[in-house]
Structures are given as structure tokens and as C-alpha cells.
Length: 287
Image 1 (cartoon, rainbow, N blue to C red):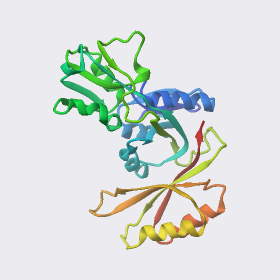
Image 2 (cartoon, rainbow, N blue to C red):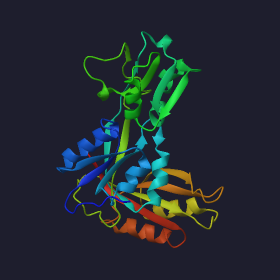
Image 3 (cartoon, rainbow, N blue to C red):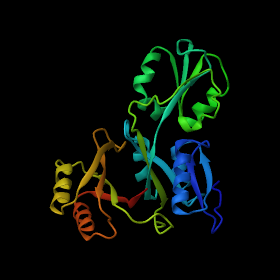
């Protein structure tokens, strides 16, 4: 049963629980956009994206990290649901390691979110052979370590830690690089891109390109079309379609606004003559 949305009542779907990086990014966006949005928390990224346009007007999800690259599950979800990207938010990311143990040598179990683990590889190498509990969110990792079980530790966002620190052991700033940051995308239902959002600044357009006939030379033809229209491709990543082994789609970011720049629309129209090019959104970064 789908919860009915109240007309005129805005809310934002967020990967919970409270105080995760997604929650911090949502607060930043709400403040910058001047929107009084109720926050609703969901346990998985899939549930967040399903809520957009159903129980919430907006959603926010992490899509790319400076260390670990793209969040593949989000790339896989975007073409499956009728949502569009309307803004992006960039957030500095810093982690700490906390433990219910007097020192690191006595830690035998580590709770860590699946993407956070890949951003703290150098620090976590010391726990090789120990038991890792991989969680869906940083909030779950933090809740687990709050249970106080001796010998357990967790990778948690720095902003979650109170003052004074409530753990016998705490190591700050354990991320692999000091300038770590994550890019979050703000989502709206397809056809509802005119919802209030932050305008201005440099725009980018995100595309999903799929060749359902698996013709050779797909990528070369697409890149040639972009070059012919003098478009700057800033990122590209392939993902399996999950329909057939060896069949892929390509997620691409190009500079510019699809809605205001004719050359982008012309290039996409040309690409669509031979393959499927889905525009996932044209949007600016919220500073």
C-alpha cells in the first residue's frame, strides 16, 4: 500500500537513519533552496528512489565519491524509475574510527558502511583477518557500536561524534585522502522538474545511453557526435544492463544545460537515431 501524499506538503526522501551524510546534505540543500521540507528516512537507496513522487516530492542520494568513484547501485536505479536529477550537492567527507576497547589491538569486529569501507582502506588494513560487518548506512554502523559490546569498533562520520567522545578509543580523520568529498543528486519525479530548486551557476547534463541491439562502435559513434557538436564530456562509466551478459549502458556527464542549449539537444537527437539516450537531468551544483 502506497502512502498518499498530501497536496501542498513538501518532503524529502533521505537514506536514514538521522545524521548520516545524506541527512547533512539534505539539510544543506533545504537551507540553500529556502525550502521547508519535512524529512523522511528510508532504509535503502532503492526505497529512497521509490518514494520520489509517491510519498515525497524530493529525494537525495549519493552518486559519486572522490576516492571510491560512482555509487553503482544508484546508477543502476536511475534508469529503472521515473525520476530526474534537478540539483547536486557536494559535501566534505571525514571519518573516525571508534571502539569499545582500550586500544586497537583488542578490536575483533568492525562495523562499516559498504562505501565508507572503500574510502578508509589504508587505516582498515590493520584489521586484516578480523570480522567485518558491512552495513547499509553509516547511521546503522554508529547505532551498532552504541550497543557497547566489548571489542567492537566502527567507522563513523566525524560529525556524528559528540563531545566528549563516548568511546574508550577514537581515531579521527581515517579517510585515505584529506580532501575527500561526495557528490549527492537531488531527485524529483519525471515531469515535476519545475519544482522549486536552486538555479544558476555552471550546469551539467547527465545521460544514460543504451544500445539494445549491441551494435559495434556504439561508444565511438556517441563520442564522435558529442565532439561534432563541441560538447565537453566530463565523465563516463559503463554498467551492465542485467538483461544479457556483455550488454552495457553508459552513464555520461556533459557540460551545459540540455533545456537551454540547442547544440546539446541536437547531439542527443542524433544519438537517439541509432541508440537510446535518456536525459536524466540538467542541473547546477549548489554552492
